[in-house]
Each structure stands twice: as C-alpha cells, then as structure tokens.
Length: 301
Image 1 (cartoon, helix red, strand yellow):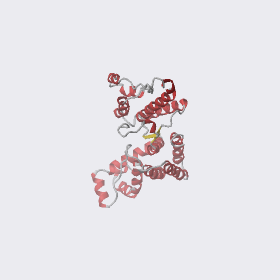
Image 2 (cartoon, helix red, strand yellow; image 1 turned 180 degrees about the horizontal axis):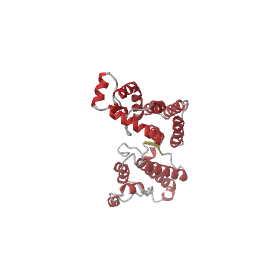
Image 3 (cartoon, one colour; image 1 turned 135 degrees about the horizontal axis):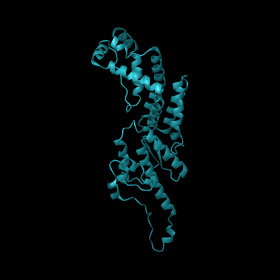
Image 4 (cartoon, one colour; image 1 turned 180 degrees about the vertical axis):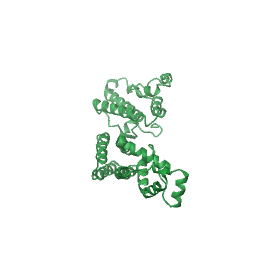
C-alpha cells in the first residue's frame, strides 16, 4: 500500500490503532523494520566504495514466504504473535491481523492486555532509535477504562439484573403497552457498541415510573424489578458514564488533533472527579492507568 501511494517508510511518523494485541504487534513489526533500515543506512560507509562506483544497499531479511504454510491451524494465533521482531512480510502481517478473529474477543481481553504490556516494556528497555511509533486509539482506550471499572462483581450483578429487566420489557406485550403510553423503547447494551451501557441505564431510569407501576399490577413482572438501593446504584453509574459518552463522541471526530483529544480527556476527568462516590473514584484510578500509554507516547510528547 505504501508503494502504491509512493510513500517512503521513513516518512511514517505514527500509526493509530485499536488496543488489540495482534494490531499492536503488527505495528511494532513495521516499527522494527524501519529501525533496521535506518541502522543499516547509518552503518553503511559509501566513501569506501567510491572507487568502484558502487553503493551497497542495506541487506534486509524479509523472511521466507514458504515457511508460513507450515503453521499448524490450531496454533497459528500463538505462532503469529511470537514472530521474530526482525522479520516482516505481508503474509506474516496478515496472519497477525487475522489471529484475533478466531477467538472470542471478550474472553481474550486479559491476554491481549498482557501481550501489549510486555511489548511496551520491551520497547522501553530497548530505547527509541526511530521517530516512528504506534499510537493507541484514544476512544478505544476510554472504552477499556469503562470495561475495567464495570468488572467489579457488585456492578456486574446489578447490570445483569438490569439486562434481565430490559429483556422482559422488550417482549411484545410490554412493547405494545410502551407504544400505547408513547414511551421510548428499552435499550439492551452490547460490548461491541460503545457507550451502550450508559444508554441502557439512562433509558431504564427514564422508564422507572412505568416499571414500578407495572410491578404493582403484574406479580410475574415484579421479580424483575429493582429495589430502591439498586435504582440508586444505576443512577450513580449513569451519572459517571455521561461525561464518558460525551468525551467518546468528541474523540470520534473525523479530524481529531492531539490538542482536541487532550482537552476532551481532561474535561471528562474533571467532570467525573466532581462526583463524590466510590464508582467515580475507581473510574478515575483506571483512567489514570490507561492514559499512561497515551501520554507517554512519543507522538503525544
């Protein structure tokens, strides 16, 4: 692709990616390849070859394309992630990019995070020899902060109860009643749809009166309803996730600059810090941990 648009690898400054370990690994392979090119050019001494009129080009190993076919289908994901960082070609990059598609995304989150952390630590020990760097997607990083905070067992339990309530409200009987009352439809969240958990909680809160009225008239429906403490919990979570949704929308802008990101990120932190509850405090702690990978990036500094 770079050759198609006549872009020299040395012109690359940064690549923005999501936080998947396979994507980060692919970018790091590209970074390593550029590093090899630069080192080869720096080590070459053209003055030694002026007499012969020849200038030696850097000898860069691109790997054996035929060797990829021997990868076992059951272990190709691990093999792809363990490729020598000094070897890169299109087949290996494609293998890495496709590795995560074979696994359940949610189940592999922890494994991906460990791989990313290990690779970043390796980069810190090696030091910077090129200006090229991979930049994590800031919007995705913010969503990972949300996932980190929602992992708490108490939060997980209340969210599971809200989902059960929403599923009950989404059957034909209650949909008909909601439409008759001209109320908005309940929303069920989805891990792959950003800020959908906030949308689910916010919509459920707006239907609180309807839900409580239905529980008084329908004994079967009553078991799905929330008690006062649980209503308070989802209101607290929703309050914290509102600034996150606003920030996410800003971070998804087509022409987002680093200054735009920083302004939106800091504004989100300030708004959440004003909320005095344990959920907000935990969110800020997770936000501080996640932002290290962005704030310490060479492209940002």
